[in-house]
Length: 301
Image (tube, one colour):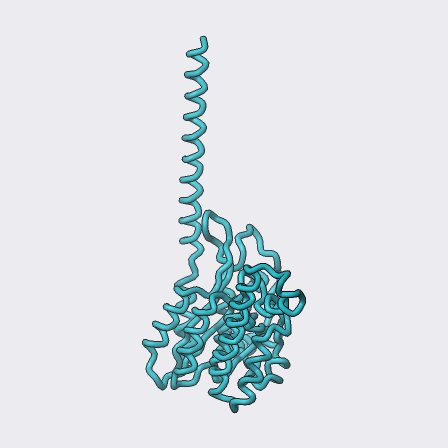
């Protein structure tokens, strides 16, 4: 009797494991084919071609959104990575020296090294560089925008401080610990961290100043670089258009319609229904021809 019970328990266990792996395979196949079905690459490429033709420029998009598919169906955040910098540098390298470059930028930031590589390549490009920010370009995204000859922002778009972060903490705050406590009461680990944080602040400030020297006198460039990198604000502090303009950066708000259309092709989130819905306004034929395609119901940007 015990042998029979053990045999049945083994069969049930094998059956449960088989069901589990079948479900995993079905889930992965569903994720794979659903991602292919919702692929907007062709539409994005066509829109970028239209933008290039209208402006006579090389158009590059660096857009980080939560796409409708990701690892095991779970949305993951995207950031500026070494892979991004490699791809952008390749696009810049393939662009004739005198041809303008238009970079459409939407990102929470990312690796300092990758952001610096992109910014350096842009600031050294001979043709005019325009960065379009339809919603936000924070941290490393702001560093890239600082390399542009012109920054075009939506009226409600924001940039952000470029103060370095060490282990998820603001470098400026780590350094401030040295002023708050007696050094004898601070662990060796924290002292080492503060040393690294101070070096990071100096390095970022110097790099940003070098970017700004393209359009500012040295004194002004180092002043703005210090303001953006010293940690006077939290890292997510929004630098709105008037603030960006007051800093002396070349900002305008004449955002082309095609940039908004491109953003519509980057869905956000993986929910069954969008978190924001709206009914597009009806426009007559003349308005449509002047403004381009009507907006589609979209997700929160």
